Amino acid sequence: MSTLKLKDGTEIFYKDLGSGQPIMFHHGWPLSADDWDAQMIFFLQKGYRVIAHDRRGHGRSSQTTSGNGNLCS
Image (cartoon, rainbow, N blue to C red; front, side, top):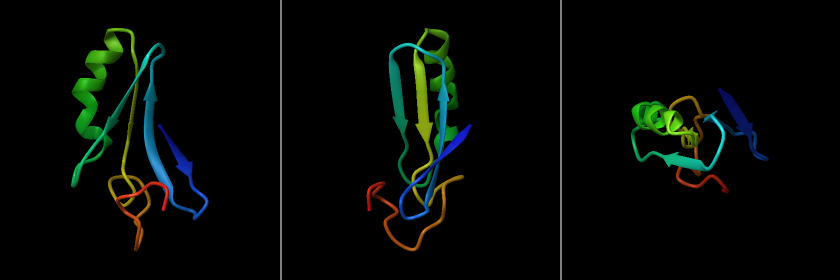
């Protein structure tokens, strides 16, 4: 599992598994990338690449004082 470091220093945690056509899983509040595990395993077994992330301020991503809903802020 990996993190992406943004210009403002925020780190976004993500899971990127498999190969083939990608499917991106984006959670809502107050969940995390782990809440997609069952779906990710299903599609991974079907030959897809699966990607899920923890939104800014959620799960293993950096806790911030602002910009929690926007990865580009």
